Each structure stands twice: as structure tokens, then as C-alpha cells.
Length: 199
Image (cartoon, rainbow, N blue to C red; front, side, top):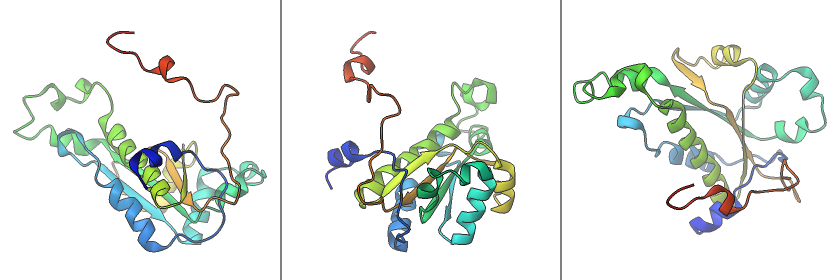
């Protein structure tokens, strides 16, 4: 697929069939995610890929309450055969900028970082997963983890220092699945978002 088509077709999918995603496609998703840029080449990111039904069940049970799992809208999402947890490691960035070739920069001090690049860089990886999913004919949804983060990290045996920036469900969209805009106005016009030379 042409890159412009991938970008135009990218949308959040919330209704998945339970059709499995072949392992080579899952490997392509994460291979592309590792090609992200990172500040100082710190590479403070990792991805935990859940394809085993038991591990996916553990994910949903740990990160959502029974009231949500009982709602009809949760079932199509939890059918996704792949859940990827992108993880950011702040310490990797602080350690990198403490090395001799970077220690002269303001970023050698944690409070000097203008934004949490560990989260931003890991978010780049999440976006590459979303775009790769479209290119492979799959659907994907990035969503937040609002509860059970520590229990999930313990259950997945994630090393200390890594924390999730969210999660990504990946799979085959059900026939006729269409994401609906959250607002009745839909996507903002480009001239409302993009300014040239000044605001």
C-alpha cells in the first residue's frame, strides 16, 4: 500500500473478529516499531506482545473491572488476538545523557528535559504499529491503561524502570466495523490545526 493510503486509512478499530493474526505479521508490527528515533539514541523502549489467550485474558482482567468486561462494547475489543504493551524507560535516557559525550548538555539533569522524551519516543513506536497494521490489512486501537498497571507489570515480569504508556489491540476488524467520531463535528479542519509562519 502507498504510504499516503496508509495514513488516510488509519483509524482506531474497536471491533475485532477472533481470527488469529499470523506470527510473521505480528513480528512485522514490532520490527517496524523498533525503527523509531530516540533522543541520543537512548532506545529506552520495549514492547510486550501478548498473543496467548491466557495472557490476553490476564491483561484484560488486570486492567479493567468486571463491570466494564460485562458491557456489550467491551466484548468486540477483547476479542483482539494481539495486545501489545509499549513500555518506556526513563532511566535509559538519564543514563545516556550522563555519558561523556552528552554530559555537557542541559539534558544531563532530569529536571531539564522539556518533555518526557522516553514517553514520546515510545509513542513513536506505537504509531508505527498502528500504521503497519493498516499496511498489513489489520486493524488496531491504542488505548490507555487506567488501572492495575503495577499488577500487570508484575504479572508480565517487566523489569523495574519500565512503565506502559498504554496498550494496542491488533486484529482483523469485523465485517462492516466502522469507528465513529467521538464528537459530532468529526475531524477538525486542517486550517484550524495548521498555521503557517505564525498563529
